[in-house]
Amino acid sequence: MTKHNLEWFSSVWHINTVNPWLSKYNVKTHDVVEGHVCPYPEELVFRLVTLFSKKGDYVLDPFCGSGTTNYAALSLFRKTIGYDIEKRYINIAKERCNNRGRFICGSSTDMEECYSNSIQLCVTSPPYLSLKKYSDNPDSIGNAKDPYKLLKEVFEEVYRVLKKGGYFCMNVGGVPDGHGGMTTFPHDMIYMCLDMGFKFKHTIVWDKGVFLNDWNIHQCRMRENHEFVWVFEK
Ligand SMILES: C[S@@+](CC[C@H](N)C(=O)[O-])C[C@H]1O[C@@H](n2cnc3c(N)ncnc32)[C@H](O)[C@@H]1O
Image 1 (cartoon, helix red, strand yellow):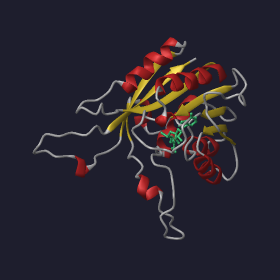
Image 2 (image 1 turned 135 degrees about the vertical axis):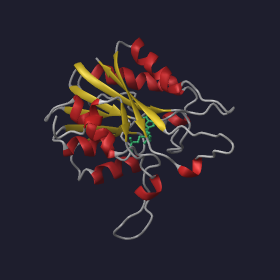
Image 3 (image 1 turned 90 degrees about the horizontal axis):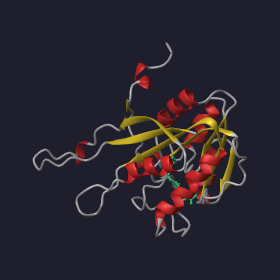
């Protein structure tokens, strides 16, 4: 406990978001390399993995993207598995993790490589509907006509593979409705998981810091600078 910042035990975490452009900058070659469009910060995952798993446990990310979850899990001496539909993201994740951990390129609607009741912790951030374009792959959830159906299939798989008492930490943020308001997407994910048997345990509000150029005080325009981490238990 003494090593840990006390903020870990509060329900608001202040962690600067990752600038996707910075993450594309290769310091060795000075090139802007192709990276992931929206990685989450390592710090966010370090905290979740530390709090909800032990050394030697399995940590899963069914939407691993650039492998942030897997990298954090390995650094904390956990075993790890990642799925992503996009080959180029899987390649980034493998390189980032020095080819440790297991990575599967395919849809996490079917995680047949994972035994039932075998995983202690799942940390993930699903596609926020079609907010970001990850790929042209028609099986990518952001491109699907009915993304809720596919998200439900993935979360049912997460439920199957988690051990009883295992945790599922889902990072979700606001999605504009296209008419000047916000959808209820993050909150819909809670009801979806409750319906399949998960227990809803905690809410962590991730304060992502201030984007000065998005703040226009004269027009009283605010931009959401927070996301949620919903914590469920099987
Ligand atoms: C929000 S991003 C995850 C980013 C990741 N947390 C990181 O730090 O890089 C969501 C990911 O889900 C992947 N994805 C979309 N549909 C998928 C599916 N059916 N199965 C597996 N991955 C999928 C996308 O390619 C994208 O990389």
